[in-house]
Amino acid sequence: MAATSTVDHQGRPLVAVTGLGLVTSLGRGQAENWGALTAGRSGIHAVTRFPTDGLRTRIAGTVDFVAAEPFCAPALAERLAELAAEEAVEQAALGRPGDFPGALFMAVPPVEVEWTQRRALAEAVPPGGGGEVTYAELLSAAATGRFHDWHDLFSFGTVADRIADRFGTVGSPISLSTACSSGATAVQLGVEAIRRGEVEAALCIGTDGSVNPESLIRFSLLSALSTQNDPPDAAAKPFAKNRDGFVMGEGAAALVLESAAAARARGARILGYVLGCGERGDGFHRTRSSPDGAPIVAAIRGAIADAGLRSDDIDYVNAHGTGTPENDKMEALGLMTVLGERMREVPISSNKSMIGHTLTAAGAVEAVVSLLTIAHGRLPPTINYAVPDPAIPLDVVPNVARDHRVRHVLSNSFGFGGQNTCLLIGAEPA
Image (tube, rainbow, N blue to C red):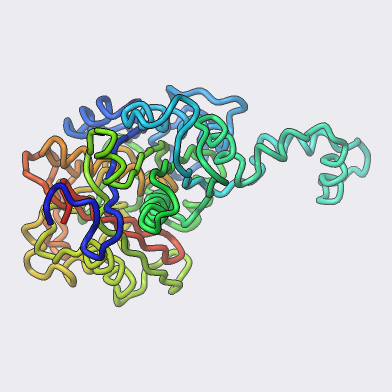
């Protein structure tokens, strides 16, 4: 297909990327993050936001340089999303400020009233009774009207609504949550809307600011988190034999997608293309992958087929690579099944070794990093890879960045509950 083509192999509008935005524990913006990632620097550190005494895991990739008021997951997620979107929209130079001529697809974490607010509710219960505060008493306290602002703060769609107002996107914003694949799903929905001709552009965002005591406890109860707290920057060890779980992270990423025809017509700088999307629901278990790897295999194959490519066309894999014993094993199995023996030589690396697992934001964060990898011809490493796992015979770009020409990146996102989404990102049309 000629580089000037505006349609893909199925005759659908070709989807170009014209703007990127990124915020993680490594810094604000593409430049800060790319410099840190390729230097192999970790943003994982001891949590100072709240006391961690008695917790099994006391580390995370928190974004401590961004303030939110009040300080809670939805408020921080909104602020992170705003920063990422500002960078992406500015780079795309599409539309006027506050008047983005496209739809908003936004991955946000599930929200609920947090401990600070629950405590405030409990303290509002009239004295008396002498026992523990009951649910009925909490409802009565909530009904006083003193906590009206919490309705918007802890409503699932509020973050997207506010971002839509801030950037002036078209139509009703779409909020979504598909566990750890959410960010990739937001991109997929934007791609599909452009392909269907519903919009010429889309602002796709993944954001997450949910490192709090309750989330650390919940993931610990699932035995999902690393407990290697000291030193913090050595805890996340994707694909290594001594991996023991993931490390929570925070961040946001935004991508401005446009039909290639519209982008070229206005003379926009095209940063790359989202050529293919593959997804497959699992449903095998709330946390574990299907033992035969079939859903992961189907998602990878789906992305490759959707792009009109072959497995031999993949130059690099931006791994889901959480560092949990089972997840890394199943991802390797899926890749080896699709790419065969060639997968031993295709470089793969996990950004989570440095920024932690940004959960709802992860798929979008890794899509942005994939596009930066294409632009710079350099592969971020998987740090903390000191003990190879003979059961995972992959080239994980260990510890040090590597120069490598990249045309096509497979970016994997596999979430709890069997949510599997893969993106095929290219330097040029397939």
